[in-house]
Picture 1 (cartoon, rainbow, N blue to C red):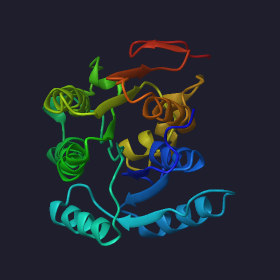
Picture 2 (cartoon, rainbow, N blue to C red):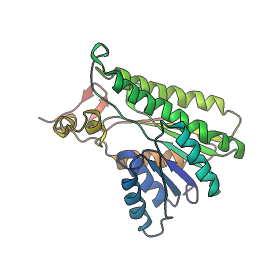
Picture 3 (spheres, rainbow, N blue to C red):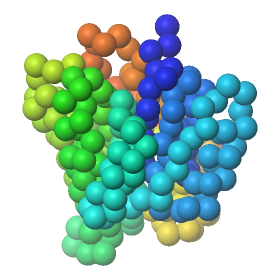
Picture 4 (cartoon, rainbow, N blue to C red):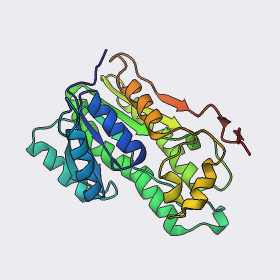
Length: 258
């Protein structure tokens, strides 16, 4: 059964990787997708491509940085002008920067990760959740990580932000008890997207080395899981869905071919 068709879904960080795959999958299931990200040119291209698919509802686009609270206020006014009530919020925008010990870490990297992964998620949830509670309907889905369950060497601050996502998912669930609003996270392990390229600031050779000799998850795998969670019956709330590629059994156990 398709319970997503006809719903309005906001996806943050929609122009690449997991966010793009989620946007495409939700559109294929008949949702009206609102694409948000910082790169306007990519938003326009993605929206045009989705709109060209048979049966897809043309997406709406809004350039947005989730770190900018004033911009989010403007986004909410933009939604109101179009009489759009958000049924689904996919908090996907996030990133990792660097791979350093705490004693060697960059303050700028820390700020960017905390401001995007934690404050950005909070900013969007704070803006959209009250409307869901008022309508007694809605689903907030946070993109977490296995880094929010197990800390790995030199992942310190990135892992801390994903532990925060896990805590916020659980805390928000408690806050909305007694309503029909659901809050979930999908927490993937090794996945080959732009993640490592961003982490290493465009060093593609170093990024490729992360996945060399493995069969990692891809963005579409994670989008499948996201759609599964969002499509569960209204009385079912998946709190955390933790997923890894078959070659990975923990952050520290990975089968890598030579």
